[in-house]
Image (cartoon, rainbow, N blue to C red):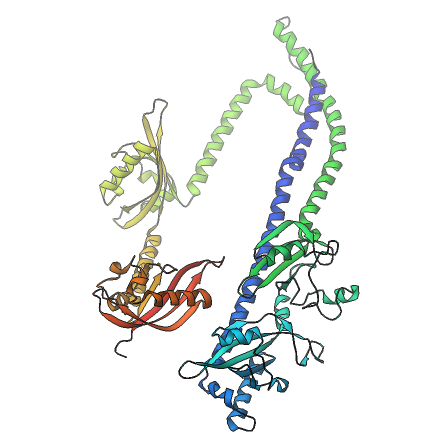
Length: 636
């Protein structure tokens, strides 16, 4: 069946013009859109993770503050002081200084019966707090942070007004006497607004926010949109302890909060309704140490705005282009097809041999006219193509000569000679021009001929050698390090024809590598010069040593660190329960200072072991290593 070339051209023009846009719409665009959405989720997850780290570190600093106060030897007497005592006034002044200097709402001390004996907030003195969890746990020897709760005494709120019920929290730790008996509790009162300011310090987008929730799903930090929530009547005074984060339609906790307080970390890229009924993208992190959740959310329209805009632009472009393309294809098809039909009729006459004197005579200033001229001038055209090919080859060689790396060709085998090299390669080898190198044996540049033999063996076996480094010499005898990548070129029968490769001078790089190695050795020597033992081990009760310095090995009765590596740490303890206690302390506090225990050396000799160490965790919170310093305290 005959089909007009004109129709074919029209159809092909339409298809191939619109095809890229259709492929973009069907294949490429969904992937781009998905990638943009994934990128937004990664950004949101990163912001949520930063907030989680920020809150965790901030809370640990508060716990450190209360531990520092409790370690003050003068604080032990504060549980027995009465107003009017000189020491009472000095202790109160010290607590007030701590509160002002470090931004606490107040500080107090109570005895082992829970009775507040001294406090910066006068209304608290004389109160019995024994029924409070943060007091009970502290009297049991724990340092902890309470949940956020409404204050029971008047406090200055965010409106500079005194109010009972201001969201507050407490950091408490046991107070011990000289014989380490618990005689009371040191308590710091923290304003929950400080957490809110910290949560709102990191902003992203017009609608993004990050907030804290407790186990019951109540917001315990202030939303950055508190003013708008008041206007809508969602809250009366503040978000903290007032706003339960629920879906307005279902009355249930929002999806993000429900997953978070269940103890899970994760995200929702498909969107869910937040506490105002807006569909948001959400990321959540659960902080089990404090029983808080960090929720990070952004309006889905803003989060995926770029992807949605891209969708609209692609559709608009496809629609705008389609109509002009169809019209242009029709007109162009007619313009191109008619001369081709005439050309075919004339070539048919020539093919029959009826009139060999005829010539194709199409006088057009376009591709069809060029086709007719090309038919008549085939021989001259071939000659022109040959000249053009020659010029292209010269241009290629000029580009090769301009490269900074050496490029060469040589004969196969150990005795092969250079058959071609660029200018940079000649200069690397100490010559002025490539012509000086041609004909010279490649093996003459090697310091050790075995390197040349190894390279040839590698090429004959694998056909290619990458990153092969050898010690070579220039024409003047100067030595240098060369890095090369070479290929064995074979003919159609598999016989080696030549070796083609690229090389460079890496002397400076080798020098830097040697300096780096020397620096590492110096660092190791420095660690081995320390008189205290420095070590790293696997976490857990059965963890083994993975590193120890020379002093540490000698303290344990070994002659070298290599003998210690792989030994279980628990095996040096006389009582394995001491090791278990140390591990529990690290898992809970993350750090342990000046911990002492009876240990034994390799020969069984016992000694007093004092260690300060910390538990190193990865970004997910999983323990990966214990590192620390220890010493022999037997003589002390």
